[in-house]
Image (cartoon, rainbow, N blue to C red; front, side, top):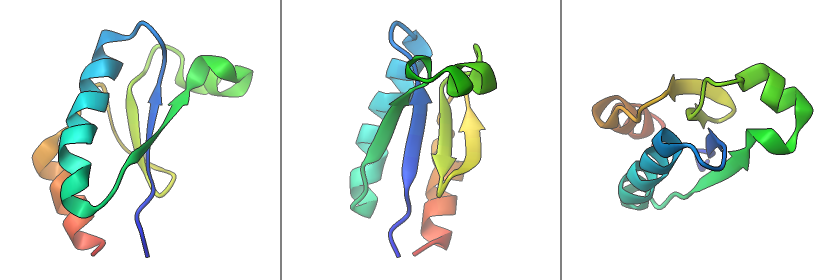
Amino acid sequence: MEVQVTLMSRDGCHLCEVARSELERILPDYGLRATVVDVDADDELRFEYGDRVPVVLLDGKEHGYFTVEEKRLRAALDARR
């Protein structure tokens, strides 16, 4: 079963752009792409995440925030293969 990777993000967020770039570099190694969700497009998401973006979700569960920890992400993806 394919892992769902989601990046909770917002426009104008430098860290979000860095995280997106990192995911675009790492995920193809696993045949994956991240879905990017703009937290400002939904009041509930804006309330839930506030300024705590970017957040990476794996299968809907929070994996990390602010930065993409490549080694940890790869370990989690390898474990799901």
